[in-house]
Length: 136
Image (cartoon, rainbow, N blue to C red; front, side, top):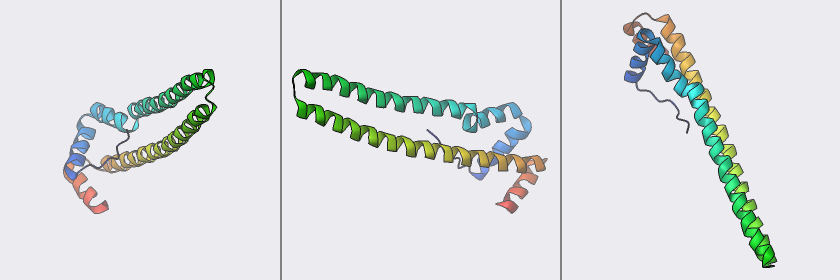
């Protein structure tokens, strides 16, 4: 699940100190939010959605076999109408979720770009606070 970054001033100051004093930890934080860590999480979420769609299809197929053997043609039609509705709703949900995930990821990347641009200009926390307050 994507999380839109909403840091408090205090957390941004701590992030600045991490950026200056411990670049390795800062990079881990950044990777988890906008790097490979977030992309891996996104792929896992998408895989789960495809498994859900596959499970609905398999259940529909198994139910269809029973309807065909029992020659309940109305049940067969109902099963596939329900399947179509479920897949249609799921695909709509997938599309909205996919679009939202990328917009959140883009906003998070923008935050890190702006943060790093400000942090590169400053040598101390006091300078960063002043720059943060004048540009915010």
